[in-house]
Image 1 (tube, rainbow, N blue to C red):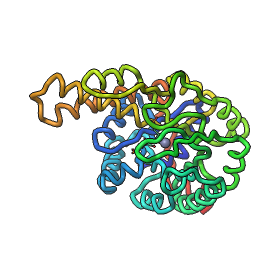
Image 2: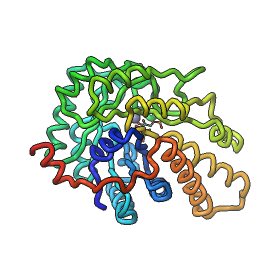
Image 3: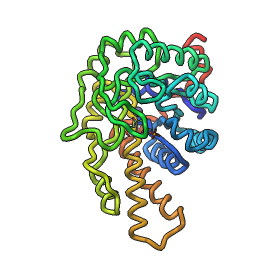
Length: 331
Ligand code: G3H
Ligand code: 13P
Ligand code: ZN
């Protein structure tokens, strides 16, 4: 199966009432772990790369690793997505590499930190939609900003999405799916005491736009056992807290289709490697710690695929090509 546009994967999820995880990757082991989980649970999947990931892998390496995932898993619908594109240039680069989906995060300025105006967001998003749809590539936009700052992504200020403005934004930009800000943030420190999310925003936007797939960023659950494992073996994570799986399931019921997860994968990989270094100080073959880390990551993602309801949906539909999508967009 060739790469599938994310628009199809998410429209199917929206109609089927289940969520699809979009998992961030930076290396071969992460990609293999995700694909192993997708095979085991028969799940469609979105693999996403941030600008930082593309830089880290020198672009071409990540491209070929993703294409290897497609070749190795011909029966699984896979979409390769740019996470938090910051301008048309980053989007062009991803499309040149063969990505079938891109995000333009116009909620922030190009620096990925400063909160942008609504007008700026509409203009940059429109420009990206016009460009990407010529190639049949799906586009994710974002309205409202997340809290939290991770590796320079995020303003640290929270601006929840206003449902009225979401309707306007969709009409003005023509994006394929929309990320809502409902009180989550990137990273391991999402909440001080109790997780609180503005779930009503999802319900409200869903009622106004039943045909649009919605996205939730900052969806790691930060399982306490993973934090404890990192700390037990020499880590120093403070009071970390994420979005409980029950809240994610409720968000899916209310209308979220794409669920972005990065931090949980980082935690499980770090905990596993720290444990092996502590238990076997004589070990120095990278395969002996990267291999178990890959396995642990695959188990974690497989359990998310079951929890999000993605499992079992890999063979529900025939894939659309980018040519089909061009016809759909009328270009
Ligand atoms: O949106 C943030 C993701 O977790 C990607 O993080 O920019 O450190 O790769 P990164
Ligand atoms: P987490 O930091 O909660 O995993 O969120 C990742 C994300 O939203 C990537 O875009
Ligand atoms: Zn994000």
